[in-house]
Image (cartoon, rainbow, N blue to C red; front, side, top):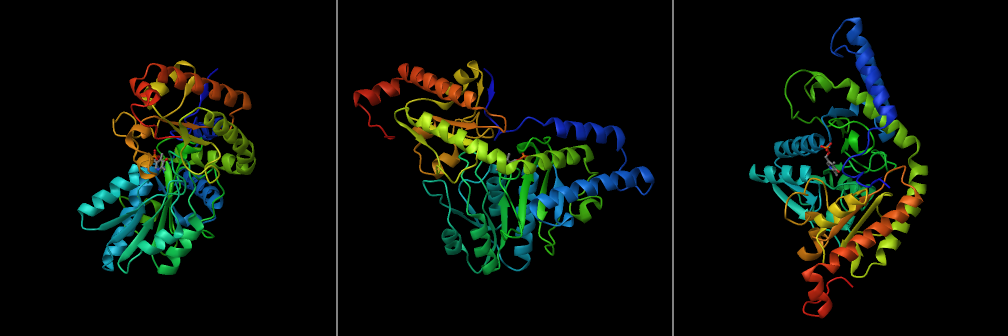
Length: 396
Ligand SMILES: *Cc1c(COP(=O)(O)O)cnc(C)c1O
């Protein structure tokens, strides 16, 4: 059996998206900025894609800026908002310890440039509260950035409530919604969101394309200077096939969003229940306030990397932590943020299910993970020490 359970890292591009992209490449080759008919045809196709994506977020088409992906959208949002703040003498930013590196590393850079950043602690259940945000806002705060759903542990934050706190305080609110768009129902207006990042390849669209929603009236400075594309907010000839492919993928994901979630949640919960039977294992993040397809566990006494490789041999593609941090020896900053100690954080596994995951596959996942964890423990010196009592167990 082959099971791709790494949909949080990237998804397979959907046939509808590929079809839309190929058709656009063949038929709509003009530059949307050209004044002739071929260019104007491209401009119409671009406007149609923008309208469709805007409708799925509850915003106006003019409030969307197309980018090269989620990372650029995050960089643009934070830098744009920081500059607006600095112009008013406000140079304090509030965010959280478990953001994606596209946010954390941009914030670190802004600190080097004279901004002050408060990173909120994340509760053991993988959530931050609106009260924490309210308490962190100061008179000089210009921006709050809290991710919609975490990419490693899948927890969904109380975005509308945090948005309300920010609106009341007169502080801009950005959310990195890369893991949420296409998977959860989102309405930027109802949720008081000023800036929202999304990325095509996390919902079966192509890689290298994303968007930033910027609430009307917010005039943020561009990250990329050049031509007048995207109403002077992002220079560069638009990647029309990618944008159209992203729109097709989002239409498909959103059209089936509720039914996909209703089908995946029981499968996710069955997988969680099955893996919870393994001794000295723990689910990461709240059991219910999590993405429909996310299962994240820590297993004591093993290394996540060995687990991944042996699972791959059994036809299961998973991840430990996020794709961005694997390859480094440091444990995931997300798991450390929710209070997992280093040894435990090293034994992590993320299974991110896709729309087409079946119950039979979930049964196989439970069986395969249980088998591999048992085997790795049987050859682990750490596990032997734990069992002999030479070292205390951390997970019950
Ligand atoms: C994948 C991801 C990103 C980066 O998006 P890219 O399009 O790969 O640049 C940012 N934030 C989160 C939460 C993600 O999961």
